Image (cartoon, rainbow, N blue to C red; front, side):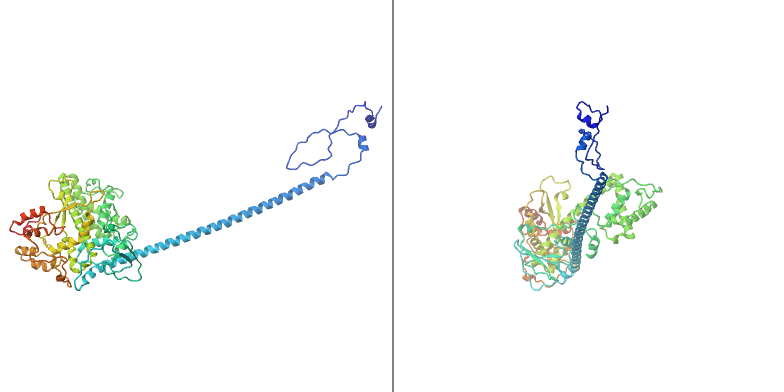
Length: 603
């Protein structure tokens, strides 16, 4: 019998066999960006009766409308986020651009400031170099004229060397150099260059309060200080590389005249002369070093390519060998092409004739060296010549040092500023200082204490020796202190005067020549007076009767014992017992000491 759903619902014995389907009131569409798996949940079964009794649910919005509105809201939100991100990125870029512009402006300002400072420093340096060139040129031009035109009326007073408490004034832009001499010769000009190089500022001159202040041009800045006791030591004449830079070396040399640059010390290996440049360039083209042996002699007629090293025929001169002529032309041309390698050599020395002459001199030296490599006797002879040249150079260096110290001491003493004392400061007036090991024929001395033997010149007068003694006081005081390390200054011992007949140099005054020596030499050389007329120069304006600082010169000057030592004495007038004994025996000879040594042959 068919039953209805209502009857089945009221009958408890009826079993429900219909399948039940899941039902959900709220169906929410899944978001497009999120995928969710459907979940099967338990839903209670509702019968038709329940639906019939219950009130119908209120109408809800259709699902398609809800699904269409939410993506529209999400799109607006995304657009706002994108717009906000774009605005933030734009603001960040603008801030970075402004920061970059500010940083670049700051960097440009720093670079401009640095460039301005560099230009200022370069301008100041150029001004200092210009002042130094002008000062050197003025010093070199005014030095002879100033000494020749200086005239003094009356007599100068002897002033002791300035003490350590004297005030020293350094004034810039001074135009007048210190007092100079007119007959100092080449040696004094060399020391003048060394004194100029020791100036601390480009145009600074040092003047003591006890001497007249030099006239200055324009406004000058001066600073005063009190020197300590250590200032008694002599200055070391040295130059820095900044004063003679490679870029300005040639210009400085041209402004100072014909005075060439000098080597600073034995560590300075720069090339200053064209002779040195030629020797270095020949070694360079031969691809050898100066301390190595020269290449063997080349065969005449064998051609050498342009890429091969230079070779010479040592058995022949340049004119005797056509191969040597070709090598000479190659060396001269290559030296002119590589002139930049020797920037301290003047441009005027790189002319063709000058280089050819210098090459001939250098080639002669190279030939002698090549002969010495093949013959032991020639090598020994060359070694002896080199040792003799070195010996003469050392002795000449001691003379120049002594002359430099005396010139410096004279400039500090106003009493000796007259031109009559200028002739005494000549290189030929200095006594020689020979080493005891140089003088000995047996070989070097075995004693620990080594000394120099001072050999004086017979024609020097007593007044001249006293003049040297006063100038050497400061030097002996400085040298009396032994150094803490090193050998220090060697001791000086008096030896016999120089052998042979020596005339005074041109420019000496009458008071510098010994009357005893003049009387003795006239007996052997009657023409001596006529020779001295062309040598002696007596400046006017000096009265010896009112100047007794150097003593009075009698006819015989000194007693016979002391007269033997007066021509080579360093410490005046003290004489030790050993020398007195030796020269007393010499005085036993009836012939005077001056005539005895003057008539001796010159070796």
